[in-house]
Image (tube, rainbow, N blue to C red; front, side):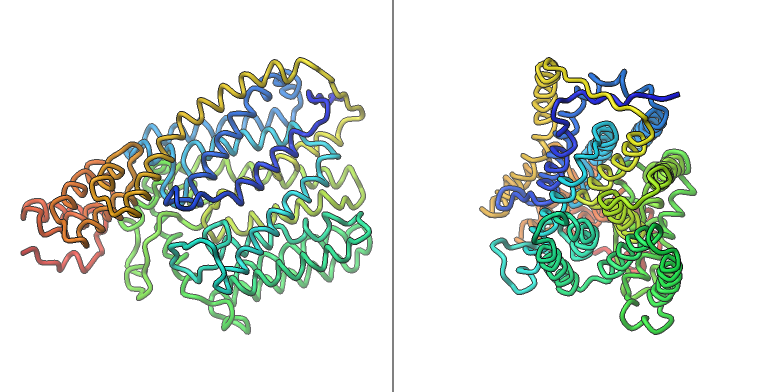
Length: 554
């Protein structure tokens, strides 16, 4: 049976607009207004984008629901939504933590649901004419954030960031994220202007900037991701040009990858360059996440709440490391999903990844020719998948993952049809836009508390206003990280009484956080009984903590 691919928009710019919004999300910052100024605006803008798209998707639902591949995508997205809700309802993690996500991560329910909506929109609205503009958009966003990160590496920055790294964070918040983003956009950027008469100049400029970004971030992830992107692109290209070279590139990729993996494990010639303590730390994170998953196999511990259980489930090996560190993310997307949402959520994500991969292979089989734009996007998609196996999710990266995944699925549908029907409906905008605007207003109302509370904390810290700081800590949506920062700041300022009140509110908000109980343990204004209880609770949540075990309360 042949299905007609129905698009309800005259100019078919919907996907391009989504991509432009994604670029803005990658670049947006609100310094001096919000303390979590790299995450909160990205979360809010992503949420508003998704809400704006819903009426359009509903309006055209009857058209795309009949297409088998889109229908299967709908089933996957629906099952993921159901599993997320099951995890949220079954967990005893704070509700606002699960809805809005952890401070500095923003991987709450609204982020996940927004990504699902964007994925579906990309699959529905993809057009051949969309691909070139999307390559340009993603290239420009990568160029801007890379140039900013390079300036940061030389100490040139118009903003002052609180960082624990080398400070080369771009607009993404972390050198690893910045280097991976540069690697992700490298291939699309090289060929975004390939039809331009100055294509070699554009390609040279992008190459220099992105490689220099990798050098200045000093992140191994970037080099590995870039190598993978280049190899994937060359293998697809040579598949249609020279099968012998495909084999050479494939063998080189296999052995190069094997040597790189051995190097990260402190074996082989690359061990000096690739082996880092952070690799061992990831092993600690992964074992803890797997242990959590075994105890919560069907529901997980709650959306973006792995950090409350990491210490409880870490093993003796992790504790014995001199570089032992705390994390609130498993640093592996499958283990993260299994820990926070149970095995079903992890399995559904695996099915989704395989579905995207098979969609691309099906497209290539039907095309039987090299498709430049599609291959560029696929190479970027592969980088995102590779990065997600060894690093936490980053909103900018996973948003592009949603867009590109939807494109690869939707394009497969597009070329599978012998005919294409474009409906010109003048009433389309007039029908959907009022509902879109209404939902955006609704989204602003839901998002405002997240922004306002963080804004109040920033204002309190700038002005040294202790009362405002306490207010921001106890105001909805509460945050474990905010409680820690404010209680410690009050204690360091010689105000143990107010710090104690904040600590009491903190453990009431989230009794499963060892970090919050520590606020009571170290506060001299707390009663002996309170501190004894705090010690016992910390040992419940972090049983291998020798320092707390030997801590004497006076």
